[in-house]
Image (cartoon, rainbow, N blue to C red):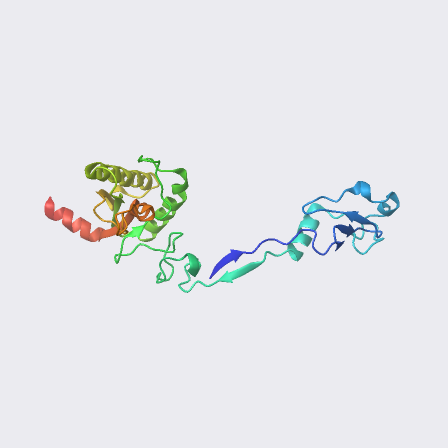
Length: 251
């Protein structure tokens, strides 16, 4: 089941009585406060400060100020995170509203998109970005690619191809070369993270395999479609046994 945090309760919850923009402190004094403010102790009459920690008020600690460990334990007992379960029909840990693949097999490692590596369709690496007009991976891509490493370690018996794709702007051959260089950048990252080179291939497809329209029906540019087409994906091309048999036939 997926979870979404709804927020933390105030640490002061239940320890003082707030009225409007003031709070009642031990002794009955009303001290002005504002959102997120710290109580100004100078606003509490000196007489009302006497006996703090002596049990003179039900709102203070009896027997002296507790040790940090005791105070933390008390807070942890009273202050629980407020979580709300979100629907997750395939139990992959990704909420239905954020899950692009609703048929994940049990216990399969998935990307943040909720998709897993399958022979049925390419696995698009949503969230992998490159420098503008370049082939260097952006730092925000590393978290996604580390998840890809986990996917490949779980499915240790397959050979995959890393495919690079572009939109239709610019020269066709240039697009192919750039898409291949981007696929190679992902290939290099995965190898550096410990995936065996014999399990990976890479290829640049340029603009030849779009998944969305680059232009609208009236010929106008469709930026959202072009963005979808600039992508990198993984596809299973064989398992290791098949790859070994193919190699032996060609040697």
